Amino acid sequence: MRKLGIALVGAGFMGTRHIHGYAALHTAGIAKAGVVAILDLDRGVAERAADEAEQLLGRRPAVYTELAELLRDPAVEAVDIVTDPRTHHSIAIAAMEADRHVLCEKPLALTIQTARAMLDAAERTGTVLSTGENYRRGGANRLARAVLDAGLLGTVHLMREVRIGGDSRVIISK
Image 1 (spheres, rainbow, N blue to C red):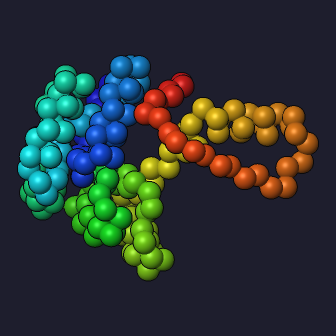
Image 2 (tube, rainbow, N blue to C red):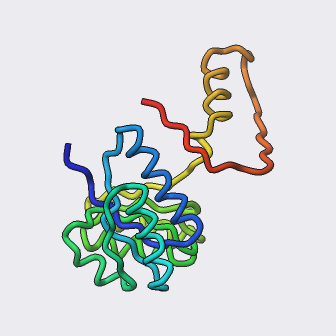
Image 3 (spheres, rainbow, N blue to C red):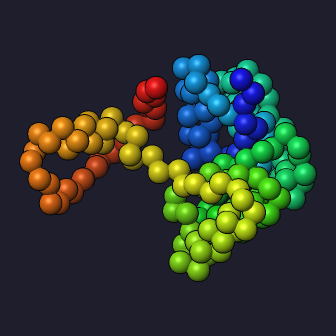
């Protein structure tokens, strides 16, 4: 199966976590995308992320420091935006206007106006725009969903989740 070529835009802490997520999918044999490029304004950060991606995924992604150059790369079919939220909308709109699909880390946008501009760009270009919301995939939340779906608690009118700490494990199910 051919894999979708993903460019990671933003290679800091959260970008590295995304590389580990792609590696977990790769290791599980269910990856439908491959990291083909990494962009960061700091070339050293991008190079270190590319080194890590090569070690975990077996292939070194191309390294970029400019969005326009990255979007000219025909191997890049989609972008995974993991930057400061203030830049999400401008990167996503540019990517969609270049006919690339977008996965954007949360929050999607900082204002309703910029979120609507992103949605308009997706509709206008026919590209996919999605938000990377990780809590719904966590083990505790999957268990809570199963308990609710099974009706074990009766009718639930309100649920509040309090979370302290975190972890780097990725739970994968088919």
